[in-house]
Length: 479
Image 1: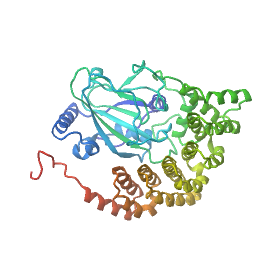
Image 2: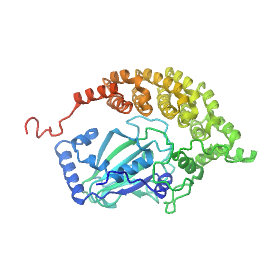
Image 3: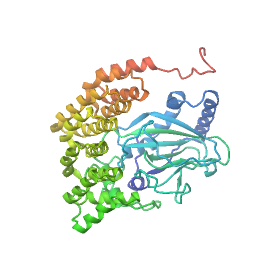
């Protein structure tokens, strides 16, 4: 089998930007998926759901994620150095009623969600999955909506991860989705794996032949159109952070109208307003800053997305907002600075100081943003000082009392990679943490740092934790 990733086309990427998901098929023979289904049924029946141990328990699954169609799709959306996250889960559905619409949490925790694709999921269906067997339902275009913009559970335009054995759904991590009704009553398995982008894009990572944003020719009908938001995401994926800045010459009437629309109860309208204000130079930034400090948390949050798209001109104002007394305002400003990447290098000292903030949510946002800024800055020799300061701050954060801060710190250090070598001793200590994801993310950070010292710690830990894949309740000791 050719191991070279088969990258997505412009049309596929445009569809992913607008709809938030793609359905993929590989060329595995039917016998591969049939054997996978049989093994899943045996393991679930005899041992229960292996959860995070899916890969070592059923080793053939790794072949799925090594397939060029899958590696190519993930590379296209998340860049060439993406991470397979430690959390994975096998979903079994035999329910005759549909599940509720939801977004997945971040391992039981919440955080401000990204519009740019920093996270994605693959859902693999090893058996034929017609609509009657209860495939995952997906609501196209809702990946950037924090709220449910629909009242009924039955939605016109719902997409389905339905098809023959070996159907894969590549979805934006934050899209609204649900389990549909399995009216056949036969076992339906779906294996869910999560993936993280470790670096902001500097160039397209798909088979790109046209840098210009254009809407896909065969798009499904989303709940609403988002031309500016889609353009911003596309440009960011091609390496152009803050591309909307100063692309419009608004008048006072337009600024007033867009500012009012930040309060629209229909979230898609508020999102359109925030991205249109990002086009409007200093006037737009001023309006978005007012929104950031608005008494409504929802207005503050949506304004942060516009500021994250407003380019370098927003950095000093966002840095000033870090002094705000309201926790949510600070958290939203931290988020926007992280999305601006290397453009926000000057904010690293103030961000680092916030690791003593009273709010765990603020501290968690800070470590994520330090990782994003540090990663972007590490490729620029003139920005080494912010990277070193970010790493020093993240080493302290590994000792934080809040578990979410600690496990987000490991992911942040993974993004900085080799320039985070000073964190290796602290990461080694984190391998004894009580939380599974603190330990897992520390291992990932050691892998992405990749120095000899990091590798020695990593190998020692993995040998201590190695698991015999043939030891089961039915086969405990002997061959």
